[in-house]
Image 1: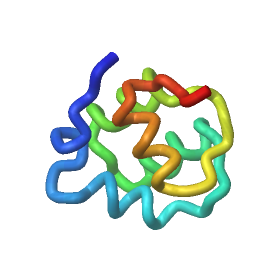
Image 2: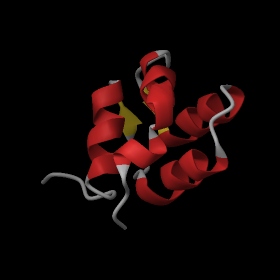
Image 3: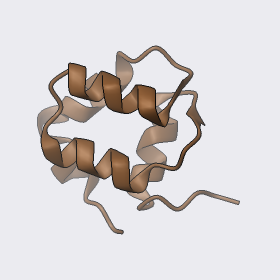
Image 4: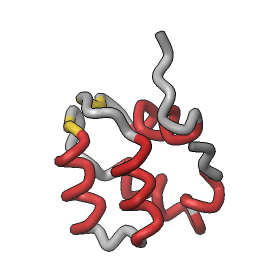
Length: 74
């Protein structure tokens, strides 16, 4: 699944939300925080579909996986 980071990150909203999260956190925690922060449904859907079930240590971890469409580096 190819995602457009700029489209998901309209006005820097996703960057700001990711920068406020209490890392490390897992996918379910990330979804809960995103919903609580009022992230739009497109962002929530992308997180659910693309992010693997793993622990994220920084905003860059999340952003890199979303930009690669969910494909992790091996």
